[in-house]
Image (cartoon, rainbow, N blue to C red; front, side, top):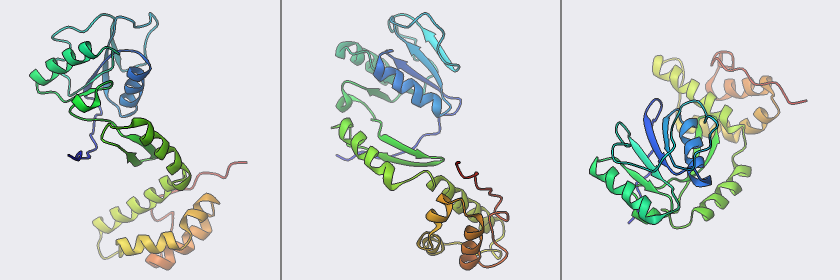
Length: 221
């Protein structure tokens, strides 16, 4: 049965990670990057303070540790311990991911490529996380950093169209014309004048980067 892909907004929400090994810490870092509050439970926690936003509980998991959580990740390295955490999570109705037993979890995590707010996710339904990571790495060359600027332009144009439908003809076809008009290359070269000419060709005057409220970063020396 296929997974149902979904992206969650976790800013300010509590997520629990049980286990502080390499896998568990990757979960912690990913959750912090999404703005979540993390409760990290593990008897092997180092004495030094964790990152801001992490509640440290340096002991084994106990019932009650999942109170207030919206997601649970268990990565203890011990299947029985992971299953015990999963049992408690399901009793409370909280989705749980078992790092060592992905087929027994309620969800799995994709390999993720981020370009600003543009997110590309690759998943194998938990069958081969290593293969998902390899494919994600190959996509890095196909989706360069300039795609973040493409998204900024597309989002700004969409907002203008929503605010004043008569001011701009915004559509998938228009975005296709931008991309086929060498937008990626112009952005990579930081050619603001060239981008302005392309925007005016596709959307008409007076559309330009300044109109959309976008300033290109300076070219790297």
